[in-house]
Length: 212
Image (cartoon, rainbow, N blue to C red):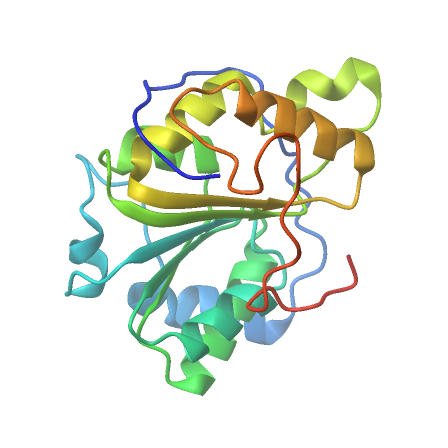
């Protein structure tokens, strides 16, 4: 999907449940020692991405980066871009910071917050080259569909944060959610399906294969 203009989106229902799980010693250490280098806290005012990275290349926002394999692979392969990952589960953030530090990556930042709040309250309009959402929780039970991240209000919000020609990339392994995503995004006038009609694009080369 590619971009034009949207309006802020406010919602009460969250698309995630915080399940910290077990955190390793190295992940805890990363959250303590590497957070000042890689971590991003909620800002008091709109946050220009150049403030995070000290430069102005294209910025890619990845929502729900999980283990961080895709985020780190692209940050390593595309040093001319900056990568801002948002993940509510802190063990994953600790793992990514450890790996980014070990790889000497300077173009990675992470936040452990609700991605909708990050888009709505932290970032200004037209600041992102890409928004990547790979394998979000499909919330398969009908009574939980209201928890899905991809909703009309979110589509408007995401489109408003993309620069002209910016890309919104999504993937899911749940066929019914894929249909829901496409219908929701096709209904947003600020977005255009690059696959045309009701099609889907093939997996891009830069999307690393995962267990999903």
